Image 1: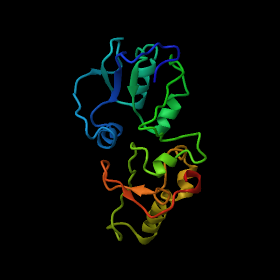
Image 2: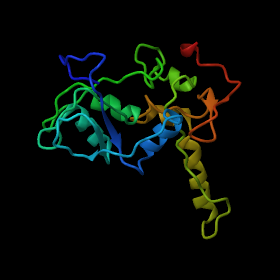
Image 3: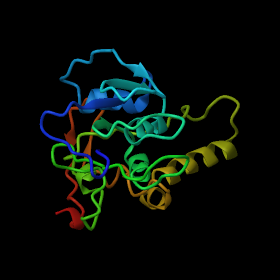
Image 4: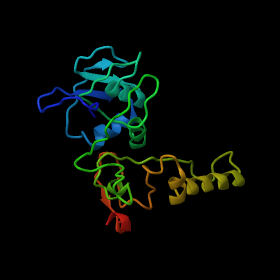
Length: 209
C-alpha cells in the first residue's frame, strides 16, 4: 500500500498500522490470518508524529488509513506501511481523500485472493468459496420464544426481522452488500473464527465456477 511514485525495494523496512486490542477487526485477523504467528505487543499510539518505521496502533479504521496515507494535522504518512480493515471500509479508504488526506491506498491480496475482486462477475467469489482467509460471521441472537414480557405480536415482528435480515435480497440491498455474503450463498461455514472451515454440499454460484 505504497504511495504512487514511492521507490521501494526488497530491503525497505515495512511499518505496521494496526488496531488496538479489543478491536473485532484485529481479533478476526489474529484468529483467521495470523493464527500461527506470535505478536510482539510494542508500538506507538496513533495519531503519530514520527516518520520512523515501526509499529503503530489506532482505535479505528480511520487511524489505520491515516497511518498509511497520512492526514494533515493528524498523522504523517508511512508509504511503506501495511494495515488492515473491513473490506468495505478498505474500498472506501482506497478511493477518498479530504481533510488533508491524499488519495490512493492499494487493497492487496491474501494468498492470491481478494475479498472483493471486481475483475470477476461475482466479486465475492473468493469469500463464497472459502479461498480468502480473512472473513468471519456476523451473528445476531434473540431470546427463545416465548420470551417473558414479549407479547405474540412483538415476537412475530422479531422473528420476521431475523428472517428478513438473513435473506439474500436484504444483504444485496445493503451498502456493504458488495462485501457481505448471506449464509445461504456461502459455500463454506465455520463455528469459530479460527476454523476449521466446513464445506457445504451447495454448488458454487455459476459466476464463481
